Image (tube, rainbow, N blue to C red; front, top):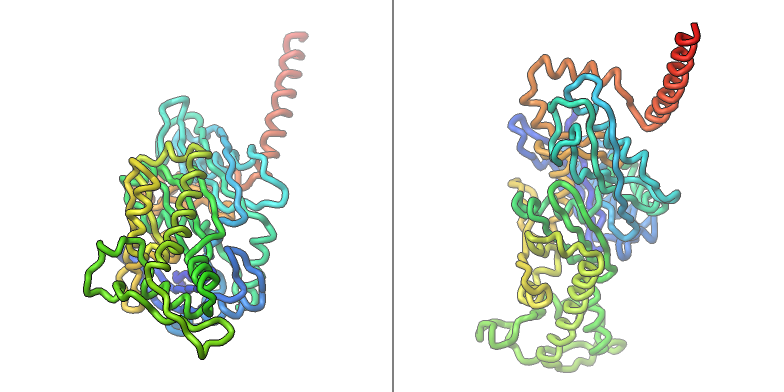
Length: 454
């Protein structure tokens, strides 16, 4: 049996495909890696299915060939560009008196059934905010508790169906199907947040090539998510337009000399202190002109400051800023710019700011210890981590805590299996049960009247 999974991060700058599996000690093994420049993707959206499909196919083929695996389905990142979040709640009775994984699945499906999903949107995550058993205190893990009913409050993340269809069609170009969608911002949070940061609540900001992803996670749920079509490539464009120089030259200047730190804070022998650099002229690259690096920093500073200020305003408007006692976590390629933490600390006053790399998965293929790898690491942890939180994935299946089964006795496992066979399996069955309850109540009332009349 092949337990390997294929994870694909469809970014606007690069596409990364990784084949991985869990070994016998539940550690993640990287089996193959493929990476290529992203084509046909702009600002979080697929704009050319053929180009995007070719890029995905190139990255996936490299990963599969290096791993020697044959995999036809993939776990895929999804930009927050076309997503909406809403709240829901549900309650179900516990027939056995002890809460099983199937009971948790059914109460989450009931919450989804009770929510009003917009017609042209599709559910990709149902994340529990809290559970409650028999009107008790709120809890995060109700598994194996005794009670007569279970209640849940959830956040439901939905995505526009057209955006999902475009991703599915692009993968078909590479002879692949989508196994699961995972919100990119959620993957970033999984990859970068420590347990204390999750407990207190933290905002994770991924500053990418052409997009900025924002999520606020508290406990096991995403309380807020948002998206900006702004990234580091906009800095390149600003330099190109301001100095009338080709895009490639502007990109080189950004990568080599970009800094948000004042010149007095840099090492005097560092090449960043070169006073002037030569830039070719746009349209006549045989000519060049000298510009001072002091002229570049204000352009860079203005763009980064604008991006962070917009995020700050969004957090204020949504009141999500009240839920981030764990601070701000910056990740993504733009965080390589020196001084970005200091600038963010000035904007998010009295809130701790940290630049974070994703959890480093040791392997011989690729270095994950860099902010630009946060999304792909989050996808791997989402699918292979043994200590997951209860939620419904994009297939409305329970993403369960695998470690919980290890501690179950054989008797409990048999009980859960039997309950699973006899319990409801989907939302349509929930509807039929509600109808049946109404019929039963009506029949009981009629029989009661007949008995009194007789």
